[in-house]
Every structure is written in C-alpha cells, then in structure tokens.
Amino acid sequence: MGCIPSKSASQSTPAPSTMKLHQLIRPDIYKNGKRPAFSAAYARAARRYGFETGRNAGFAKRNNVVVKVKSKHDKDTDHEVPAESIQNGALEYVVPVKIGTPGVTLKLDFDTGSSDLWVWSSELSRASKTKGHTIYDPSKSSTAKKASGTWNISYGDGSSASGNVYTDKVTVADVTIPGQAIELAEKLSASFLQDGGNDGLLGLAWPQINTVSPKSVPTPVENMITKKLINPSVFTVKLGRGDEAGFYSFGFIDTSVTPNPITYTPVDNSQGFWQVASSSWSLNGETRERSGNTTILDTGTTLLLVADDVVDAIYGGIEGAVFDNQQGGYKFPTNATLPDIAFAVGDTIYKVNAKDFAFGDAGDGFTFGGIQSRGDLDFDIFGDVFLKSVYVVCKSIHNSWDTARVTDD
Image (tube, rainbow, N blue to C red):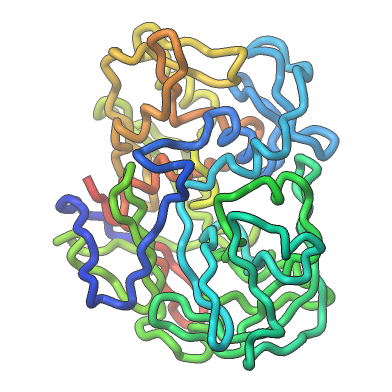
C-alpha cells in the first residue's frame, strides 16, 4: 500500500448521468459561500477530540464540557460554549439519502470522523410538531424491521442523542443497501432540536467507533463492501467552495476531477479514524520536517488544526497577524499577503488554497485564519480547510483501507 499525489485541473461538475456520484448540498444557512462561525467551528473540534489548550488554542474540553479560555496567556475558563453553537459548528454540507420502501429522502451529514447512521424519526416525542426536518417513520416502510440494541451519543457540550435500532433499505446515490442498520433518534437534546441544517448523520469512519450496544453494527460503506454492492471497493469525496458542486461517490472514481494519477498512503485505524502520516510541511516553499507526526482526515471538522510551533511559524510570517482573545484564535489583516502553506499526506505535500486559509470575517479589517492550534493533541486534524484542496479516494484492499489524495488546485 502506498501513496502517489498529483496536480489536477480545476474541479469539474459531475455529469448528471453519472449516478454513482452523490452531489453535496449546502444548507440554507450556508448559501452564497457562508461558513459556520469561527468560534463554533473551533469549539466543535475541541468537543470531538477532547483536547486541552496548548500555547495557541482558545478552546478546550474540561470536565466533559467545552469551554473558551480567557486568552492566549491565561488558560483559565472564560465561559462554557453554548451547545447549539457547537452542533452547528461544522455543518457545511449535507447529502440526500433515501431510506425505506417506498422511501423517504433525508438530508444527512456525511462524516468521516464518526461511524453511526442516525436519523430524526417518528419516535421523537415532538416529531409531529417538527419543522424544517424530514422524519423517518419505520411503520410506513414495508422493508423496516426492529433490531436489537440501542445507541447513545453524548457530546462534550452536554448534548446527546439516543434511541432504538431498525434495519431497512438505504439508497446512497445509485447504491441500495438492504438490511442496513439505522439508528432512530428517540431523544435529542435541545441543541439538536434547534438545528435545522440536517436530518441526521451518516458516518464514514471505521466500524469500531460505532455506538450501538451491546454490539456495534456495520456501517453503510462496510455493507457496500461485504455485500459486494460496489466495485471497485472505494468511496471518494470532493468538497466544493462556496456554492460549487461537490460530491461523494461510492464504487466509482471520477477521473475528470484530475488528469493525474492517484496516490495511496497507509491508514492507521487504531483510534477508529482515517489517520495517516504527515511528517513534513512547507512555508513559502521551505520544507520543514515533523518526524513521526500524523493527521486525521475529517470531513466533520471545519478547521485545519496543527501543532503550536507550526501555528507560530505561519502567523509569525504574516504582517499584522494577532491572537484574538475574545474569539479564541489567530486573525490577520484582510489585505495581508498570505504565505504559501502546504502539508504532507504520506510522502507528498499538498498546498492549502489561500481562499480556504482565509476562513471568515473577524471584523475591523481582519480575517480569521483557517489554520489553528490542535491544543495538546499529538496528531493534527485536517478538516475542510485542507480537504477542499484535494480529491480523496478511500480504497479497500483485502479488507483494509487506504486513502488517496489528489490535489485540486
């Protein structure tokens, strides 16, 4: 198993006849190129990975609660982060998925950092009064069956989701999975109930972090492979910018995205994530080594989170860049000249597009940086800020997985 990167042409829109491509949709709150709030995106990452602050991180998870710290130099707790902010912190894309017979189409958040398929359901006590969501009702599907087990996801901001498990027919793009386990939400905390962006989540990470008990259930991609529903055994993702069309594909590699060969690199799944080597990075063309460093590739995280020494080097090279104590991260003058920044996946370095590094308006003529501190984690998190610059192919070889990266810019 190895890795081969390549430069590509600009992204193409998938042809309508290519049914194996599943186009991404941006929720209404993110139309016209809008992004999640910077502080919410950062707090969501702290919740997911549970990190404590380092020199530069403005958020941390303490006593199972996500908090903002007072400043770069004062790591005492400033305040707890509202749960609804964290829930909406990285939801930039949803995907239509059909469940049941005759079937209902739900908009699900596809997430390479989790392994549950859970949906808003008729078992919610307020389901009949729910607005802005499509509900899955197993009693209206002739192929639905009650399964054993329950599920319960608790988040560091105090929010939670839980319920029962059914099996039913699930169609993703043109791939139909019979007997797929579906986790029905029976209870949702207030933060989820206030979130109008999606109707649930479809996890694409490794099966061992699935939360169904007493026994975890196969993920949709796992079933696609074991039931031989796709050939080749791959899924891919191309995230768009603004209102560009992006897509996921299953059993299909869209070669129109790039004229260059795909490069594979081995995956460490010991923590359940898509974790790969990232032992170097470059600043303005100067390569810097980070021996033994790894990163997690996560579509459920918005920012690109790296070690403090990397953060210091990046913002130290931008004239006028400062740490914003109120918002909890680095910002720079909007008219500043940005450096060329690139990070390795496997043996190859990929450039971060300046459009993505400039994350969003920080007020007073400043822009938030999309690259921030990973806190005390010993690995990086490559979220959407990085992933928008590459075409990702996740490939199964002899029941193990590789990832591929192909540059897009």
